Image (tube, rainbow, N blue to C red):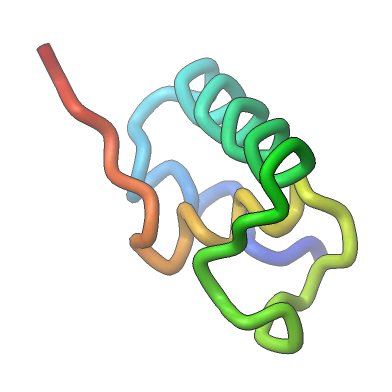
Length: 66
């Protein structure tokens, strides 16, 4: 089973397309800057895209709506 689940993530962000966009931008940001919002040992995933999804699931990333 994948963590976090798509059902849990879609309760945070209502669109799959927006979820993919936000997660990919955050993963790219992590790769470029090396800045993580959680301690590295708190992540379950090793890859930055999984870590970005974990941050979204934990409510650390918020989306501004225009």
